[in-house]
Length: 464
Image (cartoon, rainbow, N blue to C red; front, top):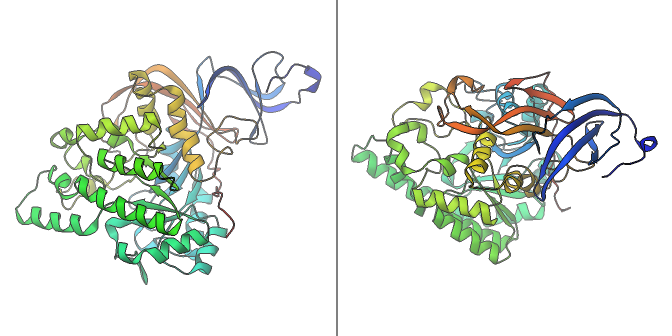
């Protein structure tokens, strides 16, 4: 929006000046006006409106806040690992302003409305970021599913690596051969199914064999969860999507073969989106000896050719977005033997710095970086353009970054309690200076600012 007549310009709450504003469509120099927590003007020339508060971006890049559609914030149920306060603190310091929390928190797994509301209440009281939450795909009861949708559930998670497992008393995830009614029910209530695509029977059998052989090396984890496990599960999930009409989102795509399957499904016109995660973009099978059980992630980190293919999928749009699968554990849990160690890595504090480094390295453009971290994940769940955009009417979620400034990722700087990142000691080019949530500074120079002000976000769904 170009404003010229000073008499027409109201006083705004916040004016971000000297900004290099980055969006998926390009970059522009200007100022961003904020009123009542939303962007009310983008000013590319003088005069600028008067403001109650002015923030000088000093010519640095201003990006939309990162939207991370795949995190495990652990509370309620697993507070020994992490809490909403600790993980949302790490998120805002990492430039993440909106998260979607997974349902699996031990005895408190979200399988019904009561448990969803309990999780949302915890988040409201202690989250520094705006938040949504998933439930498990553990019922075909449309009335119960509609109640969850009306309460704002982000979608229904089907973890195929736990197919057939009881995730809460009386709540069992369907086997692939039994899952069609679940997909049909999700389609009927207008909800997205998020799928963890790994074939449980194959993984179980390979793990049994490797344990029997006495394998204890970290690389055995990849042998237990090979590319074939993702291929089998993806084909099953996509067939269910085809037969039911349910919208499918593929979590943490990990392989070149999986990417080929995804591309064919998209070419077919099926309603499918997909994410990958930073460990699959920056690490590969050659790192198992170096990192040990820090590399234990589900799905497993694959080979160098898979890593290269995932970057290509991000560049060409086959992969829609980057999420983190942020999964905090205690230090003891993470550093056990390969079969006993807990799977997952923390990521909300490092995903944007790593992607800025990818821009510096020429692996991806800055505009595409904003697309995959901000706009596309918001679009996957109907949160765009309220989230993931710098546009008039959007929430004023902003991140100021210096793309040329170096920083080193360190365990001791991580705000999640276990402090263990697989990227400890990695120097990146691209430093976060400030994070703004709905017009309020919530992180400045690597430290949390102010009080938790997170609010629930709700996905756009079709009316059942």
